[in-house]
Amino acid sequence: MIVKVTCCVCNISFGVSKEMNDNLLQSGNPFFCPSGHEQYYTDARKNNKKKILEQEIIELKDRIEHYTRIIDNQEYDINYFRRSRTAYKGHFNRIKKKYDTEFQNQV
Image (cartoon, rainbow, N blue to C red; front, side):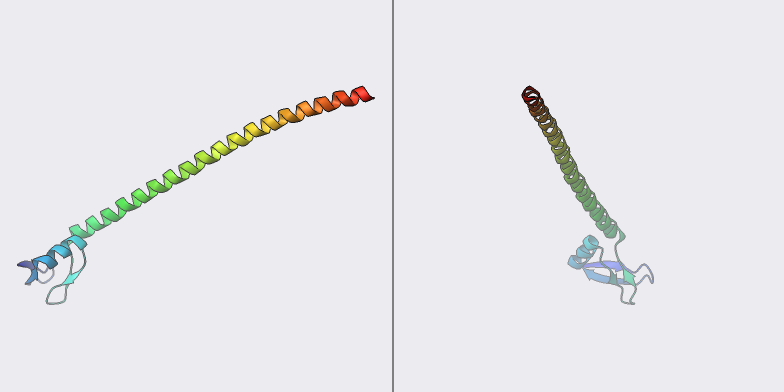
């Protein structure tokens, strides 16, 4: 089946196969009239740009999620080390008191 297409520059009508026309509508790729003027379907280009932007949004959301998980893990690690430091400080103080009491008893 042939689809009638009219050049937007020189108004010449020409025929394009339905399959090719459907492909051009979807892709937004340029094609030429018999006089050599470049043509393309703008809705397809807008849809392509929209799809590209939607994909970028998805990728950015994934990156945000990834870095949020990293931050959560680092906060967990910070809290873990704070608790460890507190525990070691308690052990140190107990040993120091024991040493001080034993050392004072020897003198």
